[in-house]
Length: 126
Image (cartoon, rainbow, N blue to C red; front, side, top):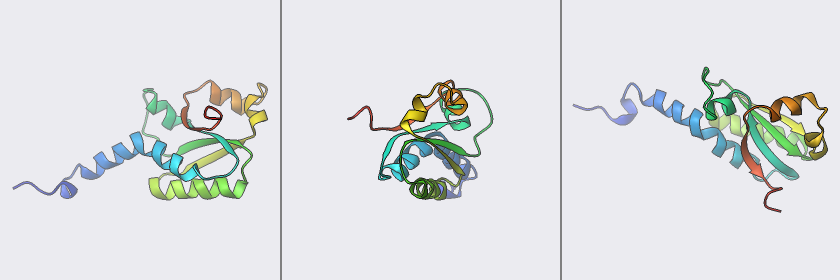
């Protein structure tokens, strides 16, 4: 007799794989959608690299770049909400639009040179 899908020994593993593969885009997008003064939100780091097809271990966190001038507390509240849903640490980094354009910012240089997954881009819709 077949066991129910939720009882199957690989059900949890498959759901985790789907969550890691597709979940962060949706969850992070929903968590940051209503944060005021956010211009752009990207996922970068290991999760973006795996999403881009680069080989490596499954990510154990999600690195999020927020471009804009939102309140720091609102950014961390959104990150906490995404983290609660994903079951993975969500690490927000903030940059103003000017900092994002600044070629001398070492972190910005590193992020721009690596895979990025665009989650929110309000500059493209304005």
